[in-house]
Length: 446
Image: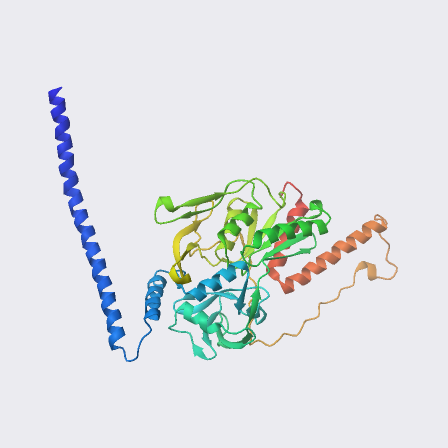
């Protein structure tokens, strides 16, 4: 027993020595890091005092400190930033679904202002601004070298005032200018309509109005169609949707899923991670769904598309999404200001990160881009062919009743309407054709 006790004591002693040998350098390294941080803070204070006392003009001290804070945050990533009291108030207005401006969501890429997406029904949308456009100047003043907040500030102005922006667009040789009149942007979170037997739900943004509006309009369109038995499926159009509130993205995904994970976030530590799961209940009652996305679909839009795609609840059609898969937490600061800090990344149910990669559609369908410098093309007349029924003395069809013939003619008219839709919106027409095909194959195919 004594030998065992001694051996045990020796083990503890050796363990203590080993711990001291390892912990010593770590403590010293941490102390050195702290010293370095304090030295850098002293350097900041020194620079600040030199500016106050020696700059050629008297500097505004509060603005200097705000600029330093903003520079610190914006150096982290494109989405972390300082929000002045006015900016913080503007952000709260946007999440409520009403604000002033042009109606575009922008980011910064290699020093240039890039359009994530124009918002439906806004001045920018009406002026033909597209996702992926670069804005290089405002009223002939270059934006190069400005921070994103400074560039956005140049685009803001009184409602009713006119602004001219210079746009560079892929596939268009020369930059071109677009004049836009600023307006109050009131966002309609969801728009809906029926195309044939398909209910189209256009989700414009993820504000606090989104899920209630989607639920209400889906029910209205199904009722207008005469019940769910007369609906062949749903198109959820997320194109040019720049995102918004996480809880609304979760609610919209949950609306069409009965169970399983919707999205998860992972932060710096395991304790920072979160996961959200779907609850039972499917507003579409199992009907097939096509989700439309493009390069202007970002953040919350990508969460919805990724969740429905991973659960094989929807076919995703269009082009690769924007790839904004990071979580920003808005933290209030003193004086009604705030900071927006990236705190985590989003992951789809299968565990793939959205960040930078985006959501890849199951079926890639390009939408033709508009060239503002192109001359309008003359419409080509569709060749008219004579059919059997046009021939003199042609026999009647004796196998169908009058009602059946009328139904065939009605179906043909629908097909012609769908063909016209391809000229207006090729991607949407493609999505509707997919649902028609699934419906034609019967319930087992769905």
